[in-house]
Image 1 (cartoon, helix red, strand yellow):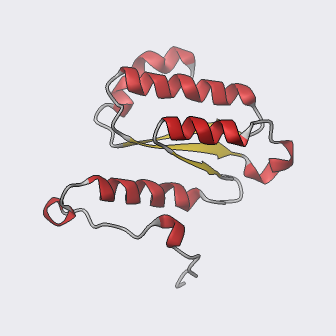
Image 2: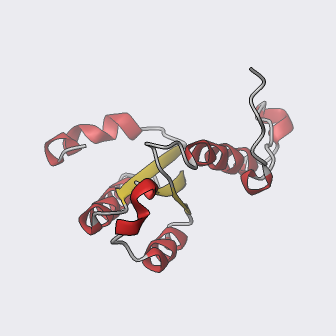
Length: 132
């Protein structure tokens, strides 16, 4: 989202339960931009949402310009999960949504009463073959 669109951003994440904060593994400035968005969420009362910090373009990881330890530390400070993905080659994309679902399911006091089914920890889910 462009800077000029930032004023409209609030209407997109109002009442959100989760957010995916994405940065480009090859562009350090994009990680700094991610921090701005995380601050915006916090400033607008969104501090209790499930966050996933996602580094994209894993398919060209040989040009990675981001310190992965810094990313992990930052994600931990947000109580977020950190993942690296490739949208181009579909690496770990499903895991983003499995992680969010798992965290949302485990946030509820009583999943039986809320109608939310608790999911298996995504790190324990194997790569199952598709049926068709």
